[in-house]
Image 1 (tube, rainbow, N blue to C red):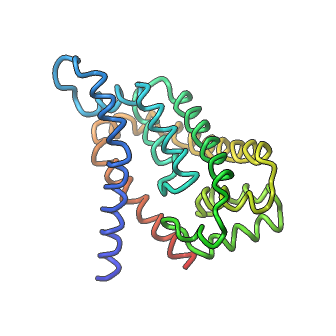
Image 2 (cartoon, one colour):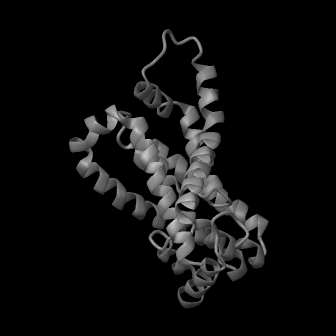
Amino acid sequence: MHLLAGIVLNYIFILAAIALFAAPFYLWFRRAHKHTAGKPELNREAEDFFQSRQANWLVFTWAFGEALIWFVIPEFLLLLIIFLRIRRKRELLLFDIYGTAAGTVVAYVINLPVHLIDKLPYIQPKMVAQTETWYHLHGMLGLVNQPFSGVPYKVFTFLAPHYHFFILAFLITAILVRIARYYIFFAMFSLIYPVLHKYVYRNYVRLFLAAVFIFSLLLLRVYQSYS
C-alpha cells in the first residue's frame, strides 16, 4: 500500500511539474494566436503549438533546465512529437541541442560543490559516486555511460568542472552522445510510426498521460536502484 501511494504521488508530482513547466509557453502561443477563429480540435492544437516558435523555446528551456535541475529528459518530449504531423522535428532537435549546450555552460559557471549535487531532485549520492568512477576511469569519455545508465545528465555537468575538463571539448562530446541517443530512439520510433500513427493521433491525450505514468515509474525505479 505504501509503495502504491508513493507511485501515485510521484506520478501526480511529475504530471503537475510538466504541466506547470509547459504552461507559460502554451499561454504565450495562445496569446500570439488569439485571433484564430473557432476552437481547434485538441490534437490539431498540439500540432499548431509544436510548429510555433514558442515550442522552440519550450524545447530549449526544457533541455537547458535538464542540464541544471529539471528532472524530465528531453527525449520524453521529443519522442512524443514524432507522432504529430509536423515537419520541423529536426528544428526542434536543434533547439534541444542549443539548450543542452547553454545549460552545460551555466553548470560550469555555477561550479556546484560536489556535496550539493545529490541535493538536487531525483539525485542519489550513489549516482554522483558512479559518475566520479566513470570520470576517473575514462576521463571525459565517461559521458558515454550517461544515456542508458539512468544517471541524469546534470550529475555529469556539475561534476565536469571539478575534473577540469576543457568546456568546449566537453560540450562537443556531450552533444555527440546526445545525438547518438536521439538517433537510436528516432530510428526505432520511425519504424513503428506508420503502424501506430493513426491510433496515437486519435488517443494522444490518454497516451500522453500513460507516457507520463511510465516515465514516472522508470524515474522512481532508477532513483531507488541507486539508493
